[in-house]
Amino acid sequence: MTNAFDVIIVGGGAAGLFAAVQCARGGRNTALFERNSECGKKLDITGKGRCNLTNDCPREEFLANVPTNPRFLTGAISRFSPADTVEFFESLGVPTKVERGKRVFPQSDRAHDVTKALADECRRLGVRFIHGFVTSVRAENGEVKGVVCGGAFYSAQTVILCTGGASYPRTGSDGNGYKLAAALGHTVTDIRPSLVPLVSGDKLCRDCMGLSLKNVGVSLFSREGKKLFSEQGEMLFTHFGVSGPCVLSASAYTGGRFPCALKIDLKPALDEKTLDKRVLRDFAERSNRELKNALDGLLPQKLIAPFVARSGIDPRTPVNSVTREQRAKLVSLFKSLEISISGARPIAEAIITSGGVSVKEIDAKTMESKLVKGLRFAGEIIDVDAYTGGFNLQIAFSTAYAASRQT
Image (cartoon, rainbow, N blue to C red):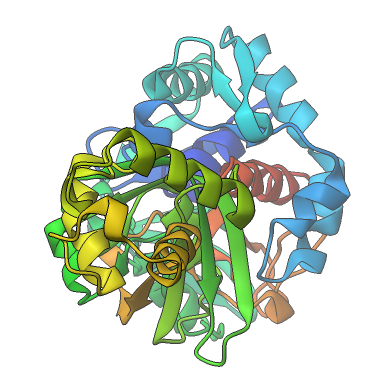
């Protein structure tokens, strides 16, 4: 078999598979290099195995959910939008549905259906799959010539790097793409974990390990007390700190700056006055109990003891003896239970990587390198990232679409 192609794509994840489909549909002889024995390992586990494909929102709302270099993506999102993503996958036999927060999922709730649809379409179009580790991208006189894999050289006029970031290295995205880009003279910005669990030494987290809180308000504050993020939803206490959807979203706002503070509103539907009345009512119904046994109507059992300890009130205090000032302290804690955050979990545990190849060195229309003709980028390898909700996969598809266009 020939080792000469029109296009070589390095990385068989979401961006790589999608780019391969687009290139092959354009009639170009396309090869897809993937180091794993199968493509789409990370795609298969996205959205807890359900695959949050995109977010059904207009462009401006989409870009508002991209904290890093959103202007760079304006054209790419316009040319291949969330609506285009839905249409594309439904044309491949993957019907979709829209859930809370405009998140789009396959109706089957199976991420592998998305991976399989992309891989099957690649095979139908004649894309050649080569399973091996690309050690270098070769360029001469400022033009890409091909790649080296397994000691063999494969030529192409266009090479698209879709190698992902440095998160979830067991799936293949271990940062190798950054090395390939840097070897060709590209600037790789500092990389750090994003959409990642947060670390806290707070005893309350250890005491509540395994407890999941639903429908709570989660706010993140900087060291200086500035509110950085606020969202209502679900979170989880762990042995190392906190995790869960709201915490992962909050982590994208830290900017890697610690310490910071997470404040939990345990009763976001109630203002303090209404909550105080609710506490009084519960105490009246449990008037003969001690405080430690009187909060079961307001808190999960596992949280009661740590919560009372945080209040500073003797847990053996009869509720009919709790003073107005003590009750005010309890209400304040319900509305703002503070957890000190000391850092983030390792990048290997992050959903995405923040940082990557500098957008200053990439043409925003074609995703082509400004340094090496014929070299293009798509997906997480680029210094763009977004919040949870399907935005990052859409970035992968939109940048892959741009990179696969012939100009």
